[in-house]
Length: 301
Ligand SMILES: [Zn+2]
Image (cartoon, rainbow, N blue to C red; front, top):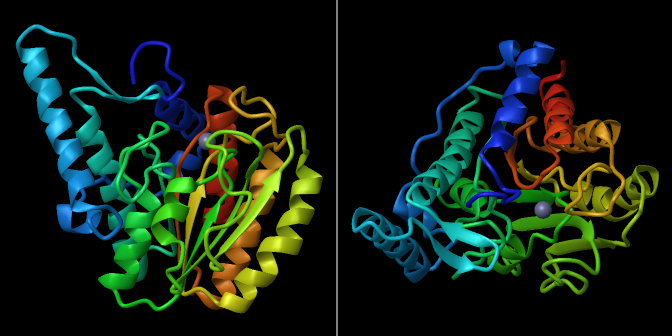
């Protein structure tokens, strides 16, 4: 995304370092992320959006080859570099491959350590560091290609997952539950766009215990009633107390608790099937520790 941008490659290094130092990394089944197919991307995105991203990427490469600047702005926060399209295709491809592996029963659940994130990417546009909506693509893949009838999306990033809501609002096969700081970027979500969206706007400076109560009251009864056959998680860790991009007060123990709640629903209704994808999380230390907590809870370590 360019020098000084919070959505930086060091985020994945911080996760890798933490998994290595804690020993958790040695206990995981690791898989490379394939490129998403265009057909899968178009389960969640307009053909024109996918074509526009490919066109923009070619333009950047041509510009670079001609000695010009090596990036183009999609919006004030979101940049296309010569490597962005490939990374975005692998991020969505990871979510799809994880979905295939979990549905095949090779894995009970999976965490995708991917960049760029996806939950702001709308049906027909990129925004907010996001190019393609990894979770929405994977959720639609599970419904369309594997014939699942009900999937849930859980989003605990500090920002509202407006892109996921844009794509999945009104799709009765999906229940999305989210919590996000409000009012805050992208200034949406207070009023959900359809009945299959459960949005919990949270005031700045709310701490973990209060957020756990909101989850117990607003999310869990709806998830129980919906009985999802699989759960997708937009796992952003920017609601952490130490993350300067948001002003919420979650800590590692809250991510453990949240993950356990999701797992319990998954175990009751979905054969344990969860695919979790990294979204935000910009304080490198807090990100590494929070992902470790999340992965430990997913893997029962
Ligand atoms: Zn975020």
